[in-house]
Structure formats: structure tokens, C-alpha cells
Amino acid sequence: MSLLSKINLIKKLRESRKARDAYVYEHVRNGIPFQIRALRKDRDWSQQDLAAAAKTSRTVITRIEDPNYGKLSLKTLLAIASAFNVALLVKFVPFSRLLREYEDVSWQALGAKSVMDSDEISSLEAWANRDPNLVAVAATPNALRLVNETPTGITKQEPSREPDRKPFVAPFNSTIAVNFKTEDDVWQKMTIRQ
Amino acid sequence: MALWKLKGLVDRRTVNQTVVDRWYGSQTEDVQLAFVTRMKFLRGLPQDGWDRPYVGQLRKKECKGLFEIVISMPTVEHRPIGYFSGTQEFTIVAFATERDRQFDPKTICATAKRLIDRIKKGQERVREFTFED
Image (tube, rainbow over all chains, first blue to last red; front, side):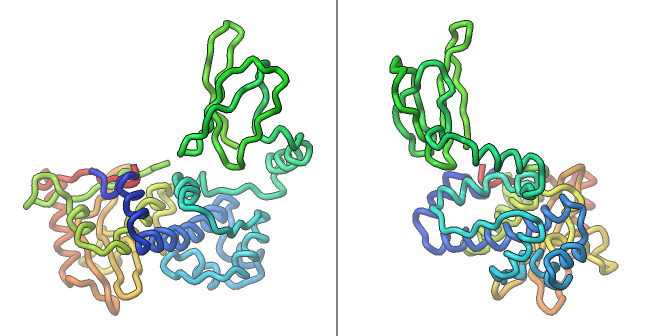
């Protein structure tokens, strides 16, 4: 039995401002402390190590890892981001994005690669070198035609015989479903999240 | 990705409702969301992450073997009480509030231990509870 199914959650969020406020508050007050602890454990750091790297005290780290504390300053968060060598994103977003962001809150999902990490460096270099017109995908022999965008943010495409069409530019943080033909002449579907 | 199975003691007065369902249903919306969100983050944690300040082992002699989930709300400190009932499995058997380091009800540890004992003897049932699925 589900205490709160996704459908009921959406209904709650749609109908009640209080529920929306509580949902945001709970995800901020849990999300940041849990992520800081996940990042710290991932690096095998003690609270003292993080305190030293962030130029703060261990007491401050203990407090910010406690979701019941609930008072976080941007200044402290920036210092923590700097200590971990990761970026900090503080941004107002629609609820649809917040729900997706917090769908998976495992430690693995909460991890963030340091800017010194080789995978992160490759990713940054790939971003710098990419063709700005090819944000998402245009990798199939025959061009793909955008059909429609579903409410879930999944963009469906189907094959087209328009070889000279312009590449489709997908919105940031979207998922694209692509139909493509294999060498055996079989249509297959692939989803790409960017 | 859920790493844990979360369970609740089935309330004997009902067919299949757990103490978690009953407690959840009696709470205000903000407490409900606080509980669900905390459990959502906890179920993604590896075993060694289940410690303070999220989950605490109760130290008093009469509470030995019990764990509390620490959920602070502006005016009330909620304490779901349970135990590790298997590999990556936590079972909540009772709910209390805390004030000045005292549980309300004061006899919650004795009650919880008696219920756990009955679960282990097969005299009480437990059932998994889920959310955001």
C-alpha cells in the first residue's frame, strides 16, 4: 500500500499551496544535508576534513549535515561547493523539474564529480568543442522529424526522408525518443537524456 | 533507487493497515510530507548512512535495540520508532513525540519492544509501505 502515490502527490501539489511549500521545504532541508554527506563520504573525508577544506568549523559541518537544522546560508553552501570542487546551482524551477531532480535520491544519484575528475574534464571539453547546432542528436543517416512534444517532456520523433533538414535542437534537460533503422532494416527505439 | 525495504507493524484492529498508515493519516499535510521525504532519502542510503542525525540508536536501558527516526517540525519533535528487521530492512512499530528528552508516551520503549518480540514470535504481522511510486 502506498502512503502517497505519484498521482496523489501531483494532485496534492496542484490543489494546495501549503503542500507545494512543504514539498519544496522538505526537499531543500533534506536534499542539501544528505548530498553534503554523500559527497563527503564519497571522498572519504571526515567532517573535520570538510571543515578544513571549506575554511569553517566542524560544528558548522555537523549542523549543515543535519536536515533538522534547516538554516543554510548561501555563503556556507558556496564554501562547501568550493571545498568539494563542484558547482552550486541555486535556481527557481517549475515543480515538474523539482520532481524529476529528486526522483532518485540515492547516494549514487546525489554524487557530483569534482572539476578535477577526468570524466568531468572530458565532459567539459566535449561541451566546449561541440557544434552549437547539434545540442542533442542528429546521428542517424536519414534526418529525423520532430513530431510532437509530450506533456512529460519526452520528444517523439519519427523517420523522415528529408536529408537536408536542419538538425533538431532539443531543450536542455529533456529526453528524446529516437526511432532508427538498424543494418538489418529493423526499426528500433532509443531514448537519450541530455 | 531504493536500497531499503520499509515496513510497518500491521494494526491488529484493522485488516491490513499498518501503524504507519494510521499515524500518517492522522497527521497534517506538512508532517506527512516531512515523513515521506525523510523516508525517501533514507531508503537511498547505504547501511552505514543510517545514523545520526537522521536515525538514532536509543541509549536508555529500556530502549536497547530500538532506533528512532528524527523528524523535527516547528512545534513538535516526531519520533517513529523501529528496528532493523533484516538486511536493508527497517520496520516501524510505534510513533512517539519527544519533548525535553522525554518520549510521549513515556512507555513507548516497553511497548515497542513487546511488539517486536511478538513480531519475532509470529504473533504480529508486518507489511511493506511505499510512497511516490
